[in-house]
Image (cartoon, rainbow, N blue to C red; front, side, top):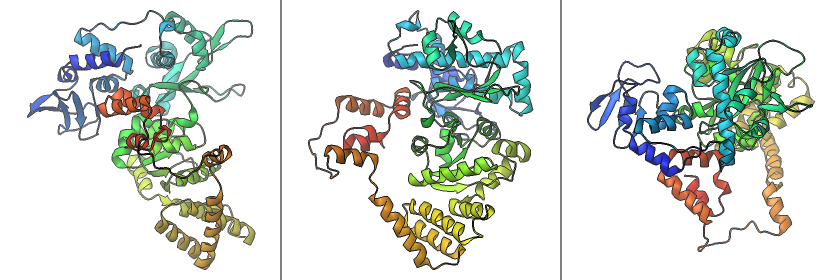
Length: 502
């Protein structure tokens, strides 16, 4: 649905947020505010507060908060578009909608709407259809509650070849764009068919809550088809730039100033259901620099908790280097052999998992333990390789005091002189400092100096200036879109970069 920001604001200001929320929460007047028991977590003492004048709500217990649209999205597990429609209906405002997807001006909005239609369809299949019983039994066997299924928008794709295709056709969705999103594909003899068949569905959300892609897992073992099917790269989805679960966990990550990084969809879902909500996953790919940059907006402290199998431990080692490069404090949670976060928290519960998190070791201790288990410390040649790998990662730590402590730790572990380890560190630092970045290489090739030239009269691009103005106006939808799409480094002037980074 294509609606102007002015009309969105008109709708928001036309309703009394207390009237909306009081349909779901028993609110009592207390001074300028209204208070009640939070609908998003169990509590005995009311900590849920609604400010009628500012048109916002906030829970001091679980830190849920936002405007009337956010409340309806959370309480009813609906999209922003659906929340907007419901609020407009309550206010008696008619929203003018185009009769066809093809008339939409914003192409990305078309993709979002198709994805949201598909997500709603898959969710309905799981929750209400007779054919979805197999999928419901699967989630029941994995101890996933219905409330959790709704919260994450989990769904089911029927085994047939044209169920989603027919649904999208009835909704007059753009079939070619649905193909671009990887929801359907072309038949050799003409026509289209569903890509997701006989699979449970995990919608993938942007940090701002838009459905941007899907992951599908087969229910019955079949060696002829891939176990997982994921959305392709599209105008609204790039798996390198997405952290699964971030939309649900970002507030808790900010609150605790710490994120737990896991591998899979079910790891996130089981931990979140257990009450451990500061978790994100790398969305079915090895951790990327773009994902780390995204996470850095919310915290610089990460506990890596990948599967205990060999593949998971190798992935953990690879992730350390990228996280250190972006100045993260990295700790590693090492689960018992054969366990992953999903199985562990379901078997032992929240308290034992949190104890593991609190006792997680720093990355250096973890690496040394892994090298020892792999037998790399038994022979001089492999031991030398292990030491050099440890020093390379220590060199990525920008804090000199931390780095100095690491050097002492390495020297003590291998009974070597500190000066020798420091010498290895200097070699690494000299090499890394002399390697030009990609941007520096391009600048050199086209003759641009790296020196900062004072530019007192440097003017911001008018579009950037207007964007900064909108950010300061505090509209949640605009702010969310900007920070989903743009990083501060992409602004053209020093002052706009600094302002955007606030």
